[in-house]
Length: 263
Ligand code: NAI
Image (cartoon, rainbow, N blue to C red; front, side, top):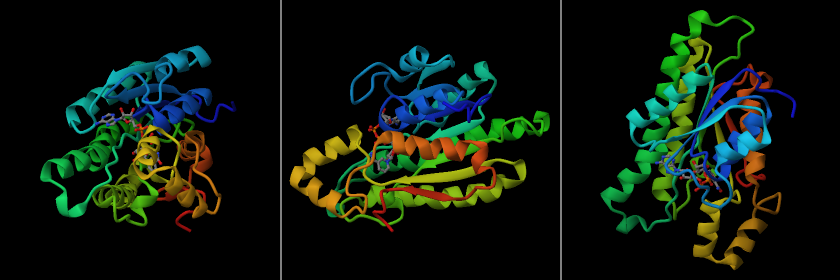
């Protein structure tokens, strides 16, 4: 622990499980108070709820807010919940869903559901946070934390995948949204960046490995220069960097955390 995020309040969507859970825990370890915004309280992979773990592991504040990111009003409420800790400084739009598909058979409902979470959820999460960050700009001193928005894209948002057509589309949208938003919010002193993980060991990939089989998983690992899947903690370290002053001149950036898979 180095207090890289001391004095900050973060809202992390999808933080009950996986990457979001690791990000929330790392943020608290680095001195941030955290709002965990998720559909569910219990981690998909099992274990204690994230906010309880943070309370047990650190001296930081943590709260859980039930939130479906495909509903902008629920995102507003999640960001509003950060007011009790002094207001949002860091917004991590991490919640996402994954759906292997056969393009020729995909339905409108399936498309709308995935885009509603992965693209619309990121858009309105960023908007809810940015409104408050812009409103707070006049009261910000030079020494106050610089506000930051981090959007979770994917390696699939760089190099689309044939069995993940809608997912790739949603993550590509997040990538370009991030560039555009960095430009729009730059004058307000808000940095906006994207993280692009490759295969990371979470419930999302466990579910996928069950689908493709362990042999295919071994083949997938062999195509990754690092020779293995990543860990959620490795994604969380990237999220700490982007939220911290170490990244004070980094905005509109795509930080790829994929063991070299797309390089
Ligand atoms: P996960 O499935 O382990 O956890 C996702 C969390 O998001 C769950 O707690 C779930 O309840 C929550 N969530 C789902 N829909 C939601 C909604 N509508 N509103 C609020 N919360 C919702 O997934 P994982 O792996 O942690 O993924 C997190 C992000 O990282 C996603 O955006 C995913 O696309 C991205 N990612 C993951 C990769 C991986 O290999 N695990 C690779 C690249 C990107």
